[in-house]
Image (cartoon, rainbow, N blue to C red; front, side):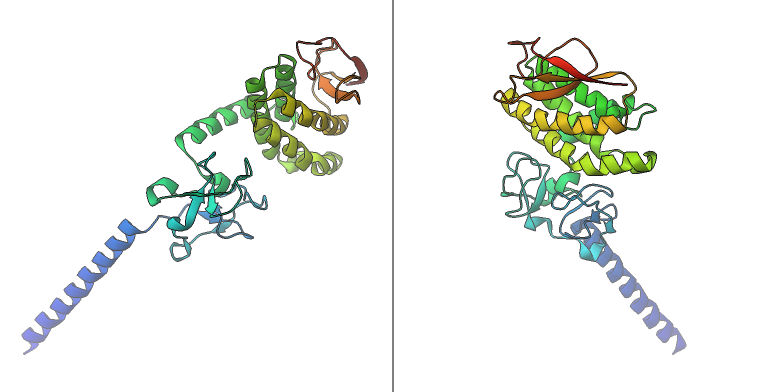
Length: 281
């Protein structure tokens, strides 16, 4: 009798173990591994890598996403121009403003959503951008930002829209990477005041390769960068220069490392139009 009971108990235990293993196998094969996913605290439908920015509010993705909280990828849509940007249907692309309309399949969405999404192309771009930002970061906490700005200015003097677009992309990324802890109270105050304004113009310039639109945003970018640079000094002497004919005759300014005028608003058509207003040392 005892022997029969022992056999029955063993059989029941084995059946329960087998069923549990099968259940786990199905969960692992059909579910999405969300161990590395984090969500926006204000918009939990937006997920990505920890520290990524939410395209809706700009907050960092900081809330861990559990398996049972993961969102069905079938409900995600991508931007037709920027496939790495995903979200709910009808959401706006953070890069171009178009609605997200392209359905995202399971094997296309991976683990990242919103601005945290990575494709082979964006991954390579991020590697390149990180390398550039790191190489240009010196003792000055804003050296990478300033270097990218001067690269942008130089590209506009040559009427090179593609180079200006690339420099603006680096500028945008360098702005987002500034660690406020490295700034003094006075520096942090000026940086907090102008950071979003600088990012706004950099984002618009990096979104197009047309000089006319790039130069429109370069006007306000330069004005705000001047205010920042007056407080957080560049490592080298900087010349604040002015062209009276730019901006439809209203005039516009820019910053340069060279005392010689090289006009970013007229480029090759009038390279020497302008004067130096101020020298920042």
